[in-house]
Length: 159
Image (cartoon, rainbow, N blue to C red; front, side, top):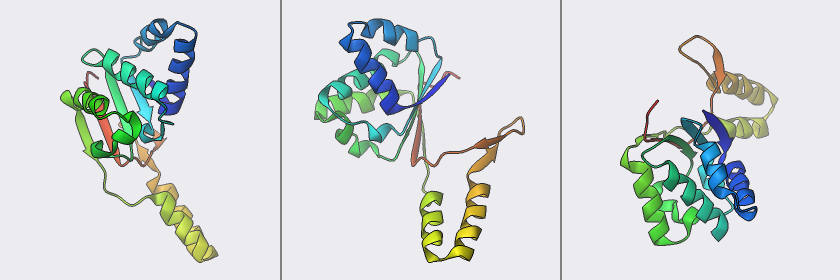
């Protein structure tokens, strides 16, 4: 399993494409049964970036799992892929075998920032709340930091 911010994977793929080794880099990423793309909506969105991101999704489609965290709903993915046909094709591949979890919870980061701006006592209480809310216990009991995505998509869940 590989966890990485989407922009890092995209930059890695762009460098591989520039060096004419994109196929080799995609094959290297294929070693991972699951690829977790964090902050999917924050790709810089140039045409080349969109192309390598789409290529990655298309290559993994129906073969390997992809987990995507994003604050963008599918109707806003045109901000990432620009071209309507590419957006439709990407969404189609992602949702075909997907489990989609949409979280409608307030951002704890925004709550802490608001509390800090209102004073020290509220800020301290908000930080304590933030610490409790920003962790979860895994099945083995380990305390793990959690993220706050609006959408978590597990495409082609094989794991």
